[in-house]
Length: 327
Image 1 (cartoon, rainbow, N blue to C red):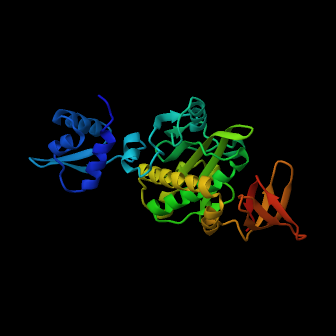
Image 2: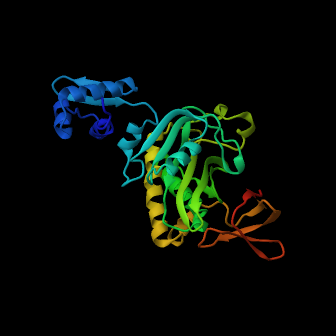
């Protein structure tokens, strides 16, 4: 049967808490038969949802799986467009290639590709990204902003603010942004952002925003070589985080801030980026494709370019680089 109403039914049951919702009420709300409602409930049970049936009163949702199913994400969404189309797979090499393919085929802005496990996840500079099954958020979001291609790198900074705010809302812990594309907690990496471009010389066709968030990992879940530099929300907060709720919140802020950027540029978002930043004011090592320099990160411009003061006082403008904060 169609799953068209499943996330709406789930949302009603989530919102009702301990108050039973009758099958007849759900049938009336969605113009469905009682049998159709029963079938949807059975589908949800097969996916790991647990219901209490109260005689002559209805259903109470008692527990739900910590999954990334489209229905669970959509039940938590508060967006106008982002997340309307969600492509979910249990396993992918990486979400980026499939998102690229869908974007080339005309998928609309806000389309999400998400999976439980990546077998060949990657970050910037083709680095490997460890993506354990059922532990994190591994997704790509298609954006179609009406801005020129040279502004594409700024969307990494926009996404960083969106993810930071979502983490703060859901996990109640404040991450810091390390320019240009990492989020840290206590100096340990929790999120990476990979922004890739499909464009003509003067027009962005699509931005493919790859987002990886370490959510419910234990320390032992990370490969040994990154256990001293990576962390998760669970490690930092001591509690399990509902990944679907976090995905929905990321999409909410990503939609909000990307629209704000298109309307007003980076300037109104810059202040929030600076408030989350752990880079500004720090002595850093800057590695570009051409050189390695040392200096102090003094600010970012309204274009999102990092300004680094070198030992001789010269101000260097850094558009793209890896940086290491010197301790």
